[in-house]
Length: 446
Image (cartoon, rainbow, N blue to C red; front, side, top):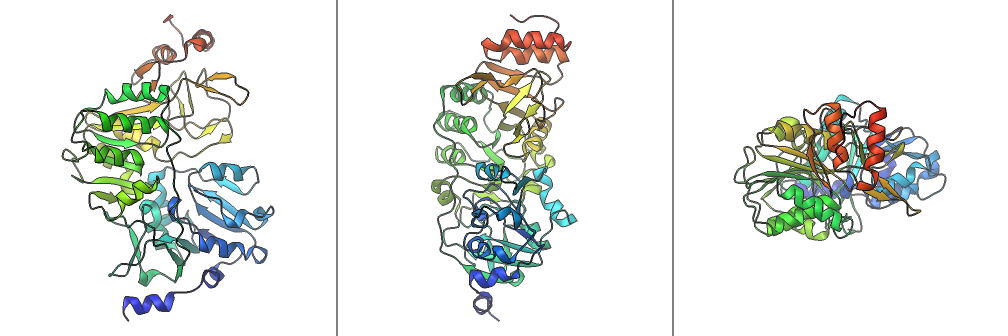
């Protein structure tokens, strides 16, 4: 049978496809831009027929149809590998929960049975001449999902970029149970959070000054990493490489400015390597059929051994807050969940192991609450319930608009002094007083 004939045989309506889902099933919704659309709407129609359906997914870019009803939590539970703002809002409704992970290990979770999959459904690019449906910018862990799923339903979207790369970038039609053709909605976009602020620019300049020619870059999402990317695009840096968990718009700007060649990469030379991508249409157009880019599972991109193998690896990530011990919280504020562990710790560890590598955690020194009150992001200790994303033993460079410090190897009083030196001046005396109470203050830096 030809692939075309097999395609016709497996092509069904969304309503027909979702009949595979039963009460008590674990359903995988893929990831990020690959989250299903037509299949989600079809499954929502079956709400009254279903109970205790657990779903896995992450980084939702738009609300799900299955959770539109007020009583949705009685039928469906969302288990997120990494939360977006949409998923955070679902927590209060009691239907959304975070699944703590080290992102690099996620494919193994599935293969070892922790990620249960009765039915997998996600968006893909159109089938190619060899019978493969490309995952788009979502290689991530989908290869492992497909290995373990009892049934696989692919929702073809003509707008999904076809992302080339290494292994586990698509699924063959022979493994697919059903094929659905939806309405081809635009691929979900994720912006960088607005233009860079003056604080972002100050932090970015401090970091860019530390980047040598030929360095290999990893950027997180957000204003500060985006500001770093913009400065790099305008700099005199050359022959940069890319090896990142998440591909973001900033890389497109850097590449189009002629700064990225990958000529000095120890592995995957000349290739921009990434585990998944989310950005704007500009980025998706750049990723489509681009042989310079290499889509790969996160078990490779985020593996400390892969990162450490690349000389002069520069890792740049945000945080929510930090304390005087050097503990970094990047996924919650107290017990209020924000995002997830992701691969930040993997890159912090891998960058430090890299020959000439550096890991930067950056943040503004303060934030303003809804009432207009100013608060320090640098705290004596993390707020009760805050999750430690990077332990005090792993943190290397910390950057705010007031400076850059390297706390590797510093004793408790040395790191307290260094961290207070990059806090907002209005909070330094208070932090010194708290450090004295905790017996981690030896001398004043005033």
